[in-house]
Amino acid sequence: MCGIVGYIGRKERAQDVILDGLRRLEYRGYDSAGIAINHGDELRVVRTLGKLLNLESALRDVPLVGAVGIGHTRWATHGRPSERNAHPHRVGTVALIHNGIVENYLSLAKELQSAGCELTSDTDTEVIAHLIYEARKSGAGLIEAVRETVSRIEGSYAIAVIDERESDRIVVAKNGGSPAIVAPGDGEAFLASDIPAILPYTRQMIPLEDGDIALLRAESIEIFDAAGTRIEREIRRIQWDPVRAEKGGYDRFMQKEIYEQPRAISDTIGARALEEQGEIDLDGIELDPKWVEELRGIHLIAMGTARHACLIGADIFERAARIPATVDFSAEYRYRDPVVGDRHLLIPVSQSGETTDTVVAARAGRERGARTLAVCNTQDSTIARECDDVLYTHCGPEIGVASTKCFTGQIVALYLIALRLGRLRGTLDRGAVREAIVDLRRLPRLVERALQSWNAIEQVSRRYAHFSNFLFLGRGLGYPVAMEGALKLKEISYIHAEGYAAGEMKHGPIALIDEQMPVLLVATGSPTYEKVLANAAEARARGGIVIAIADEGNTEIRDYADDVLFVPPAPEPLSAVLATIPLQIFAYQIATLKGTDVDQPRNLAKSVTVE
Ligand code: F6R
Image (cartoon, rainbow, N blue to C red; front, top):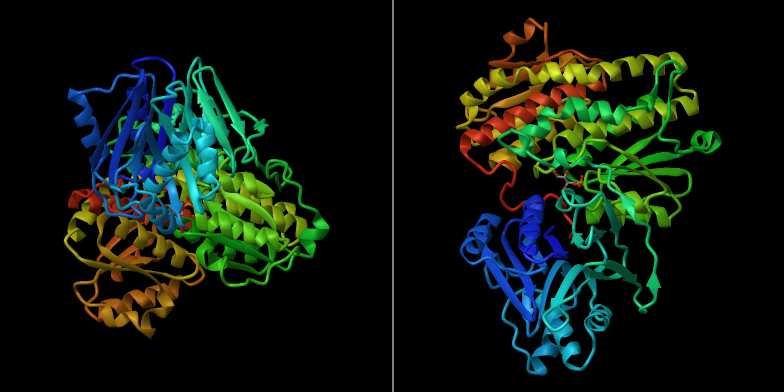
């Protein structure tokens, strides 16, 4: 969380590039924003509370001219959102932006105060700026001052620092769960938390690793380790298409991303599904058949929407490859002493590849000997780099804070892995995989068809936008889909919604059901379809209103539901992808009717890089 951006290069350009970068990173936090520009020997800082728009309008009248600058968009951790807590923090000649958490900031603050420093914010970040400035006053150059300071910081950080007395450079340092990339341009250099910020300017980047300190000048980028020794880091080519990070005529990114699902799914399948051979090629990832045969279990770890994809994945692994599969919140896994070792496959699933809980949980599993295979959307992200293997979802940049296309992309990626494992273990023959591939290849067209119901779903959502509580129910694969539908609704419309296993309804939640609590019921074709119908009848018998998600052609469902959102029928597990589409649209439409900020819902940030 928090977005950091920096630019050094041509005169007059820094402010524009930084504001543009912040706009592209605003999904990382939007409590406040700020910018610092070095112009010659003069450093100027402007900070505003609230969204980036406020900063943009503050700069409209008095633009900051200069060739070197840094900018920040904040998701508050220490210190409430306010102008004084906004970054950049300026101390003397130094201005600094930070993403992360300084765990020992209280002791550092005490030490600084005893030495006579006045702290003017409630943040943990300000102590870093003071320490750097104090080191500068004692004669250290900017890069030495940063090196000395970071050696005293406990916690995670991606920081960028400029100083009006060394105005030809930006110093960047990274440690822990806060991502930072630096990128060379033509006579210019960039830094950012995430690729979208630099997409329009360069196709190259270097992801910084823990302990790296980078010195950016217009003509060069040098990277040093904690001891000050120069190190070489490989320059990576950015694969994402810049156009994909634009709204492209849609009202909101979330809407665009929902519509992009056929393409995202088709790109994720790509050349991995070999229909003729009845085989899956996971980008050449080598899995020793004997090791696969002896696998004791698969552990899937993730947070939020990605965890819902894992719940579907676990079911698929058990069915297709007959391997016991468990799912955990990454935040729980790392603390619960799991039984995991070299006979386990650990699959961290993450859109951003930067979710701290998932990064750390994956490390913990790896340390115990598990083989790690990440499912990840962001190229060269921390999780992608640290795991033994990565299978990318090719969904393109996901900018809307609520995840949509990456959820369905993750299901598809997990299905591909399950099919491969099934072949290696002999639980699936070529014919079965061939059939699965034929279905997978049809999936993008079926999703397109499901999207054609957008207007019909909009009509239905109008009837329900005034309710304050919703229950989402499903069985089997419909259960994680129900949880995902509830999560989408609550995060963008702020309406209370719960996802439950439909079979659990009678064990408690049924007490909630009345005419004020609509029930969204996933009732697409499945082995438990009849049981789901029984749940619908039970809800209605208690005055409940039922909105069912059902297969096109299902004529009886109208007897069980007040409204029906139809999707094209498909075999499991692909039916889970199709059942998700109307729930995404339903949440989107209700939020739009309520007038919330769909792309940047309150209190949330796209990548959660703090625990
Ligand atoms: C919800 C949402 C979050 C993320 C979660 C994990 O719409 O987007 O619940 O799924 O924060 O993020 P990643 O996938 O980046 O690890």
